[in-house]
Length: 253
Image 1 (cartoon, rainbow, N blue to C red):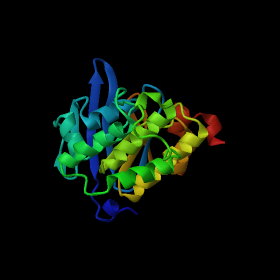
Image 2: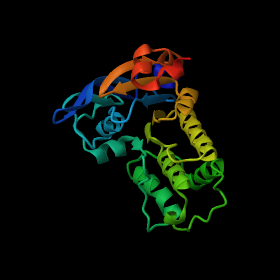
Image 3: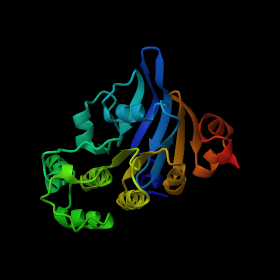
Image 4: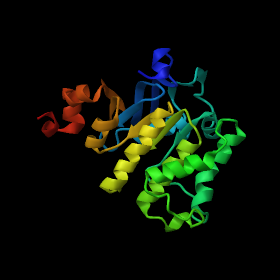
């Protein structure tokens, strides 16, 4: 049981959150709580509304109805930058990095922004940065090298390291293992474990069911914007609606 679960207070809470794009339902009455120190998996077919939900949480999209609460404060109408400053971090399906800047500058960008808002409490950030790089077998890299010279997988890892160093309360990972090899995927798992130890609440969007079932404490399933199931990985694997909509009969065997 995590710290926030003990006091019964979620770090982030979505209540009846809905979003339509014209006649297309992207999210319909979604209820979801996030507690510190746990990993919540968000799964579903392509087009189910998973990335849309992340964009609603971060403020890229505005909700049509419902509320989003962060640490007891209603943030439903706050702009994206305010949510980021408060402690909601995210990564993207394709890394969003400053191609013309060094590896060091890219990593420290998120830290410097968080420091200005008083969220980063640790003084020796560089030692933490080196420890995270070492966890991903990248501690021997030249930090002054250009980020654009790194392979795709390492760029995705750097984006997660940057987010963790910003000491967020919530970390939203949008398909972090997509396009990565097995070794890089294990590094993703290691970084998520570090985040959990720091009592960060992690939302994981991922199509690799082996990875999701391994690391997630809870799962929620979307289909055409509707929340069709919530539960533990074992409960989701046995849920007939989820099997029919997403996992397929082979997963039930």
